Amino acid sequence: MKALQYTKIGSKPEVVDIPIPTVGPGQVLLKVTAAGVCHSDEFIMGLPEDQYTYGLPLTLGHEGTGIVHELGEGVQHLSVGDAVAVYGPWGCGRCHNCSEGKENYCTNAAAEGITPPGLGSPGSMAEYMLIDDPRHLVPLGDLDPAKNVSLTDAGLTPYHAIKQSLPKLGAGSTAVVIGTGGLGHVGIQIIRALSGATVIALDVNDEKLALAKEVGAHHAILSDKNAVDTIKELTDGLGADAVFDFVGVQPTVDIATASVATGGDVTIVGIGGGMASVGFGTIAYDAALRVPYWGSRGELIEVLEMAKRGQLSVEIETYSIDEGPKAYERLHEGSIRGRAVILPNG
Image (cartoon, rainbow, N blue to C red; front, side, top):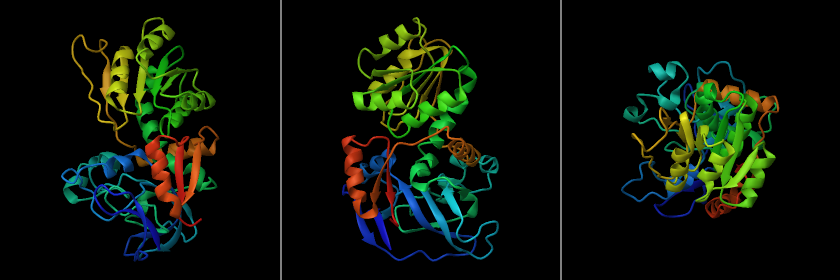
């Protein structure tokens, strides 16, 4: 089968031919219908050799949907032909967090060498994908795989981040979304659907700000040296009740911490390497700062339910698996509108 792999430190991803995985007891083989392209992939492919821990060659893709193709011995409650979405942050299934469906915060994964697909285990950018346990599959129903595969990360991650701040986002509140690309443009829709907040979106060019307005932002402003002052003006000098930074580079982290209101939340989702300064006089009184990771299995079910109700829509560009390297080139250029999706089986 064809797969898109990262094969050598510092190289670009390439399309290779590898064997179709063999299904073992308790496992599930999917025929992949769609795989999402993410900045996390670019981040790990940019790591130097002494920091890279994901194994080589690595089949990319931690966002995936598929059709159940084969069931391993003992698998129940699934049938060949079922349309499913892959829950990506795999855990041990036994610890306290996993028992609550919060495998994104599994306390045993690191020690036991358990890694997510595309981030250590073989991912979804292949014609077929092996799933370690059926609990990591969620029914997709009638949702279009290409249009909704990105919700397994680009929907689940902002949903998990935003859900924690909902008590502060009632009527009359303000939420700031920094970065309106793959995660941010979905985050705007989640805030609009679940809260009473006015949404201020920030990004670096007019095209991305236009997308932010299209998906529901009340205000769309440039993420520049004037951004904090503009946010303060729009909030009568108070700042935002919640700030979600989906970029995470130093300038955006600085904007996030400078624009939060007293008692507000700052949530840094992006993995751009920025560091927040927290201390007396450096951030608003009683402000809280979080660095969340992905989301729970239950939250993925909720995200897909929002999509089924028409509350979420992902802007996508589609590519064949042979065009996969081009998708990553466009991701690096910052020219993708929304999210890139690879269709391994056409």
